[in-house]
Image (cartoon, rainbow, N blue to C red; front, side):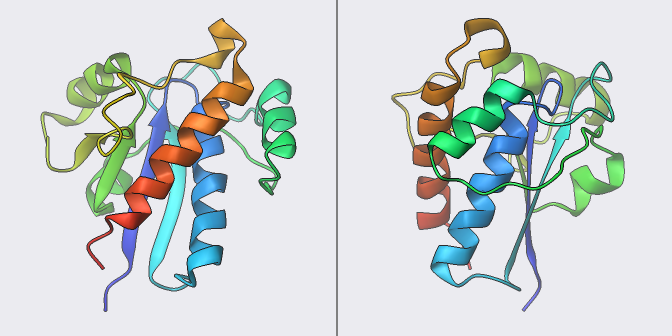
Length: 151
């Protein structure tokens, strides 16, 4: 069986998408999906390339008991975009950038909240400061994604 690949994207890859990546890695571990599902995270902008997870997001992940490793923000490549089964984005701005760089691929580029319609988007906590809220929303969305994996 081929590996199912998920990429989470956000603007800079220092808050929402790396949090989603590490939450998803915890889901993989809890559900025994090692070797079946692979997750990563990337940016759709170049401002933060090479930077680690923003410290307040690290604090929110610790508070939620989500383990994480050293992270370096990276831009989504064409190869990564098209080798993934799905690229989950956080907000409309992310989708606009995905379409600009890679074209319109609605079956591949999907909102992280697709199974949780109560969320219109996952806000950027860089601006709102609501890191714990974002982690809670991401946990809910990612749990729903894993409940609906086609594997």
